[in-house]
Image (cartoon, rainbow, N blue to C red; front, side, top):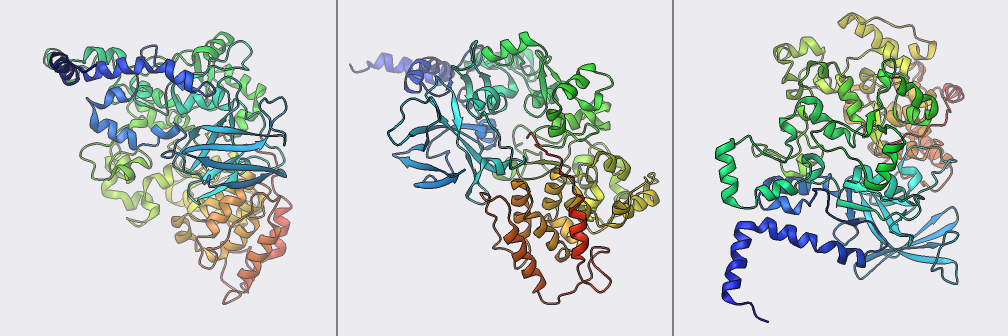
Length: 628
């Protein structure tokens, strides 16, 4: 039946004056239809005051645009031709001798694989085809989740797509863990784990047995309401332009009822918003765990943390619960923190922030450097801003000079480095790459000063030697003592004599080896240390027992002239053949000898390969699984 003019005029007026209401009403009609079409995957369902970021767009188009470009938005997305970046063009992959087939059909994506025990819908050949439901990630790598047919439970594709190299890699190679101890239990992991930090208001809805989750989220990805709080009441209060103007003039421009502005909170409350995903938070008791399994976390931005508490190993003397966790679940401690309690993996930045001396002043927070939205006066493109969501000039010394302005006029005297050099950048010394994640080095967010004693005791690389890889720890200790009166610690023979890169790469644990391999490809370190002499070390690391270490090493090695074609086969146990090939190529270079750092190189310029083998025999082989 055609729409009458009077009705049309009313509809147009509603669009102009109350478009948000129409959008909200439309959203409320969707869940039933979505649930019917997608019975075997988690779904977006508004509720408990949450709506969706689409409701914010009409009033906040600029903020919406920057959020939409951010990697927060794409933490989880529904699989589609717009979101899937992996190669599903009839791709055949092998895992533990079993074939996995990935393919696309009319805009939908599928995995065909050997059916797990007890599965329904199995073909005569023992295989089954399942649709890809969700995608996690869009910056460094993508993980794909398929429908299992068990309620809304998802399974994980055993391969990850590396976006930087446009190739599939085994899931185990994407995360640092022992090759002979593959992670199990991937079925349902998204419903019970990833949902915490990759969605907005995730509700596992696991039920009593946890086997048939009816998982709901307010929105896939980290959306507006994850940081600003539920928006339903805010939308209702501002649905008409006249009411917005009335509130603006009667309550003042700063008054924004029923919504949270993180930038206007105190440092503690503002940073706690980030801690939802960038910290290790533990459920306080069994009752909280039960509530979470059904309805998700009760924390709301700007409010007190409830149901969870911060596991802060550096405060173990003040909190008996910390010591209990370390004893009951040591893998969490070892996998996330250095022995002194400093975070050693990505997505744990909040721990460093609250442990920093700057935080004690009361004004230092995550938002001292990062911004949820690109400011209007920021000249960078949205793509540039989105890389780290840093404010304008926050990747320069301006970040620290906001508070430490006295150093602006005496920078060289303070840093002992030439202005403009990498050593004169505050964060290279005070926030070094001592955390690991996403197959690379990550900056520590604990603001500290270089100290060989503290770092050596924790088994952690120090800022100075992450640039000066050719120098020993003793060299660094002497420089710190002379320039800043830092106490020189006792060091063993290898620490005192060996170049730091050789010590960490040959004797260190898997985490130290991964960081060292990444640093040997980091341009500032290559410029400060020279680089040709490090190729034999990278050749050793390319045959490491950890797939992730091999992968990081190959990436670094490809930065060296003549090694651009190096790729590791991550389905193989080790890469002894590739190591030998790299060494042969290095020996055959022009000028077989070189002035490399002693004692790795003899006075004649020859590499002491016997010393390398001796140091390898002393390697720390403690099994390590870094829990990103």
